[in-house]
Length: 105
Length: 265
Image 1 (cartoon, helix red, strand yellow):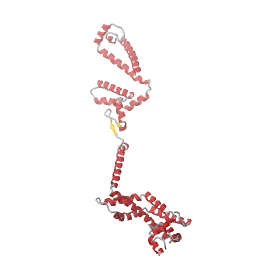
Image 2 (tube, chains in turn cyan, red):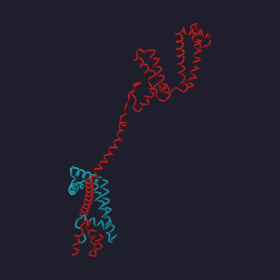
Image 3 (cartoon, helix red, strand yellow):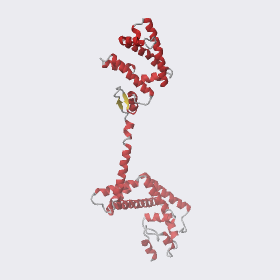
Image 4 (cartoon, one colour):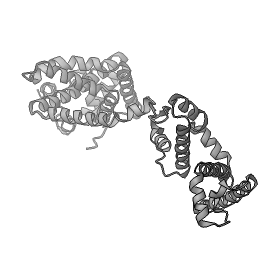
């Protein structure tokens, strides 16, 4: 299908962007994660990873390899479930209200 | 050809919807998106998977932001400054909290060096001022003067046994609570009564003193030859009845002097 992104992430973000909901959903996710203390925990994990080697600060690639799986695991299950449910509700609202047929800007 | 090349260009992150919609090669873009949306919403499992991957992707983006930020801070040594500031703040908070904690937790008691009583630390200064008679309060100074007077009298009467003295003190005057109760129970008019009661003792003491030095009094009496009551010294030649009269006169005078002294107070 033409214009359709290959992966699921692009698909969802495109549909949200067309319906002017991508920014709102991104803000919602970030706020909930900060409120749950996820950001502080990830920062702490980062500091620990950096201070493991006292002499040299590790490279960004090394940090990404180490921290990314940890960060995914650190998301509280309740928050993740709530966010999934809320995004699903947004999609159902788009379906009920009708998909956007015009471009706002 | 343009349709085939379109998905390659439209990578998920670099995809600009407005550009695609304005593209003349994609006139039916919104209709296609709508169809895709309907397909996605029909299958709930696919929708949930898509949303989950979308959520993970946003989490990864946030994580990347945190990693870049912290890495830059460590590289530029800006993080160390932040840590030092935090440590200083924590030290300042501790120093503010420390002096307050022992006062709250432990009520300490001090032993008064004067009366050997255990007094709470907060009341110790006040107690010591009262006990030593240094405070401005008139009651305490009176108490202190009374104590001093009783000490002197008792020290003169029985100077041999110090331990007996201390026991007597504790029984009569050295208990500050008893004194407080007495002071509270007495009305201001009645305050003068103990002084009056103590005055005859003084008069008797004077008389006894005069009795001891008879020769000197005789000398004075012979010089003055006056019959005034001031000449108590002439007790050596006077009969016991006259002595009593003189005593009464002396008491009356002393009472009047005591009243004047009260007025001065």
